Amino acid sequence: MKTTLVIMAAGIGSRFGGGIKQLEPVGQNGEIIIDYSIHDAIEAGFDKIIFIIRKDIEADFKEVIGDRIEKVCAGLGVEIAYAFQDPDDLPNGIKKPAERTKPWGTGHAVLACRDILNEPFAVINADDYYGKEAFVKIHDFLMDYTPQKGNVYSMAGFIMKNTLSDNGGVTRGVCKVNENNELTGVDETSNIVKTSDGAAVDRDGVLTPIDDESYVSMNMWGLTPEYMELLKEGFVEFFERVGTDECKAEYLLPIHIDGLLQAGKISVKVLDTQDKWFGVTYKEDKEIVVASFAKLLADGVYKDELFSDLAAK
Image (cartoon, rainbow, N blue to C red; front, side, top):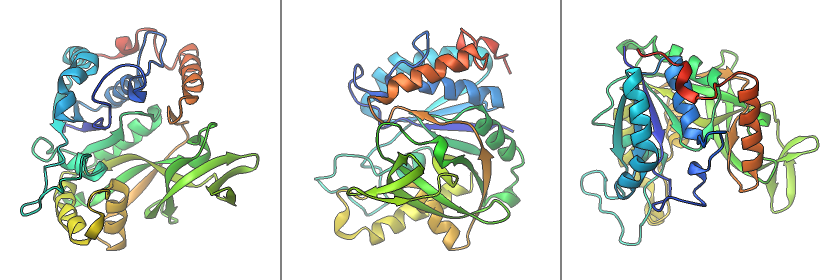
């Protein structure tokens, strides 16, 4: 059974070069974070990759990332496909407000894959490093897919303290989990900061402690083909309630999945991962991320030539 990795990359800037955080070199040979995610996904068993991008950056994206990855994947028997997130791609009868310039969020991004996605799949952000363990666990979960399990999903559960930045506040989906390690709710929480005691939510300088051992969602989901129909239905419902905020509102994966959970339509297994998340949220994060990848290389987690340890499928 084919399993697909969906990479949300539509947020990459339209002009490639300095300042675009998803393209910052972090490896010794100029590798970027996407390279490591693709390596780890292929190693775990994924055999199809879909890049979600914007049509206006297609040529630049392929020049900087896509063409290079296509050559690697061709030698490994891994399929590459593209989906395009378009702000005008809306449900019938709905017209984009003239003032709206940006796409409609991560749920809308995944919906762009609806015509080319027919197998169980994982979703990740382009600019997050997740580690090997999460890819293995989600792939193994997806391999148990049957149509009878179409509304049973999974989520990589990262420990909050492993996902915080030393350089400022971050937004995380703080998870509620029951005794069976099933997700019961996701609370999108902004401005979570490191403190000397652990972590806190910073609200205009007022720090409210938060459990840094909590699970958080880093937008790494294991989903099924059946989810796409729910996602499509949810997008229609999104516009029914968006009201006057249609120029700024976003259709977000964690919020949609949380709504389905509360309605009892799905279940989500939280797959524990102890790996440390890396990402360039702030400019100052890059030095730490580069050092972290150098240590992974020194420890033998990756080879000098990143994809050299992978065999053709």
